[in-house]
Image 1 (cartoon, helix red, strand yellow):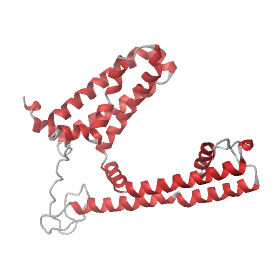
Image 2 (cartoon, one colour; image 1 turned 90 degrees about the vertical axis):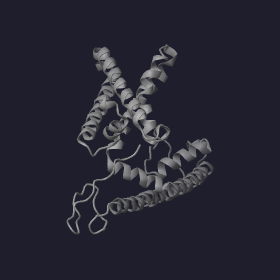
Image 3 (cartoon, one colour; image 1 turned 90 degrees about the horizontal axis):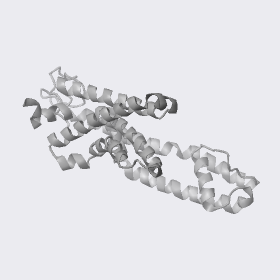
Image 4 (tube, rainbow, N blue to C red; image 1 turned 30 degrees about the horizontal axis):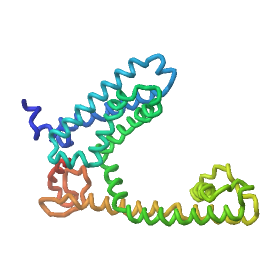
Length: 275
């Protein structure tokens, strides 16, 4: 049959340039959103008590649908192992596993684990990332800036450890700082400008250290934003430079542009994304 041909399936499932591919993507996005609605409704006790069986069978219908999609992706992927080991392959697997695993954990002692598995179905929403080019650009930017972000968080960890240790020494257990980890917890919520207020310094020296910590929190909050913004701008420039005009060979065209903005020649459509 034509629809069982691997090339045809690959074009429809992994591609977005054909009408069939766009219809498949739209149908899958709708199924993902509807499955999330079922998950949200199932978490409300009164609704679950009244419509539990309906929600149960709807969940199984979505699970079977996403299982079929996953099997078809594995079947027609150009590199099956590459797809299974990719970010999207793992997310697609996580989207169907919880429902099946819950079958083998029916006992009362496993209720907490079953609840966790049910919540893991929220990973289905990550499947939407595949259909948002801007999200893919953001993910590439995060990946490219991973070393800078790692250095930033390492420095931040050192700072909260220092401030937490200082407050433990200055304030002591009598003011709520019963251990260094407790001091580190206070430093984290303070330097991130959250400030729960469950632990507060009482001495003047402790308050002075707290003031420095708060000001430092405002000062460093822009660091990761600047790192990611710089990488995001670089990725966006790459996106514009990938498309070349066959007539004048100039780049700088938007992803969805159909004609060259320099000479007016028709641009070649973008190639189908690989698995």
